[in-house]
Amino acid sequence: MEHIRIRAFRAVDDRASCIRYVYEHSRLLEEIGVSSALLHDDRWCTDERTVMVLAEHETLGIVGGLRLQHAAPERRLPVHVALGSRDTGIEKLVENARPGMAELCGLWNARRFAGRGVPWIMTSAAVAAAPRAGVHQLLCLAADYTMKYPLMNGFRVLSQVGEKGAFSYPIPGYTSYLLCHPDTSAMVAGDSTHFRRLNDLRRNTGITRLEVTNKVPLLVTYDLDMNGTASMSSLPHTELRRSA
Image 1 (cartoon, rainbow, N blue to C red):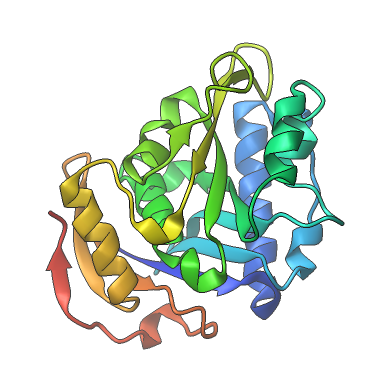
Image 2 (cartoon, helix red, strand yellow):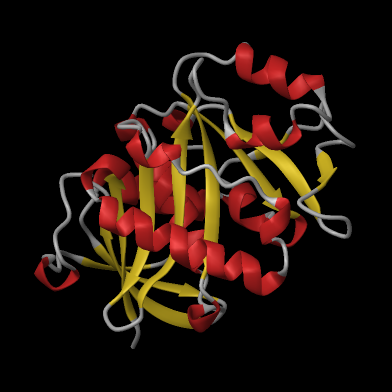
């Protein structure tokens, strides 16, 4: 059975992993033909508030990742930079946000490890870890074919912007939706089963679970404490739990 680790850490604590994340993400964007349409700004690597969530495989390396990027007066969120000029409602949304708003962004899953539900697993881990990272409200820009992942994790479409939340982005022919998780501490999820799973991840940040997505079983060790850069082999295998 395949085994991965889902690791959350502050970007400034592991620059080497951030560099690998950027490289793998950029390579995937080039493969699908949208790299030139996206803004590349890696200054978040030096922001102590940026939190990374990586999916790491014992032999394949990093096979997926995302980041939680905080809103700040000196640095606009990626969605603000990308779409703010198209809809002033986005700027108002960010300006009126309460402290603790961040964007779940830069999510990708390597083609060499696709079809195993890694984006859903990473998004769940990010929502579970958000309050620990000082994130109380999350924005997310998701392609129409990945909408199910944020929706299952408590996000809702912001229908007051764009065309009922939809934008033609990043290039013509692609549709993306702007979503918001209004309160990460409230543990809102798409259904009661997933609610229990999120709550389990939040209460037990170092567990190993058997996750079954797309009918493919995957052993997942969660390391959501954000307490360092331990190697995958050194992680303790605590109580094994099965995905509901």
